[in-house]
Length: 206
Image (tube, rainbow, N blue to C red):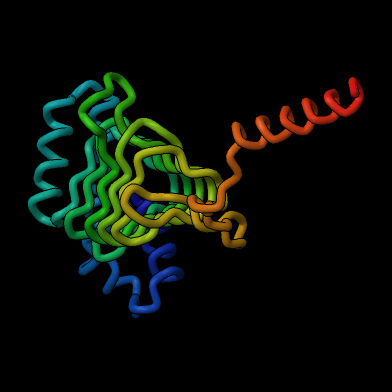
C-alpha cells in the first residue's frame, strides 16, 4: 500500500499544477485520502470482512466528502480533483489514469440487478457534477462534460455533453448535428420512385 500511495502522490503532482510538494498532497488532498481508504477497505472486503470494509468507507466519506463503495474495482492512477460529493457505486469499474471532478456520481438507475453501475475505460475524464448512471461502458479516452447526465454507452475517444448526454466529438472532430427539419423522408422517397416507375410503364404501353 505504501508503494501505491507513492504512485498516487507522484501522479497528483504530475497532473495538478496546484500541487507544490508531496507533503502538501499527502496532508491536504481529500481525493488521495479517499482512494487510500478505498484501497484498504477493498482489501478488507476481499479478505472476508465486509462490515469492517463498509465502516472504513463510511469513515472516509465522513472525513473527505467522497463515497467509494469497497466493492468497486478501481485501476491505477485515479485522480479525484477537489472531490466533494463524488459517489462511486458498488459495481463500478474504473480503468487506469482516470480523472473525476467534484460532484461526480458513478451510480445506478435503480432498475438493474447485479451489475448496476458504469464501467469506465482507461484515461476517462468526468467533469464536475456529471452523472453516469447505469451498467454500460464509457470507452477509453472519453470525456464527459461538466453537468452531463449519461444514460447510455459512450464510445472510445468521444466527448459527451448535455442532459441527457449526447456525443458531440469523435477523435477530436465535431459530430455534425442531425437536421430534424430537412431530414430525408424514406417513405416519400420510395413513393417518388414508384411514381416515376408507373409513369415509365404508362409511356411504354401507349
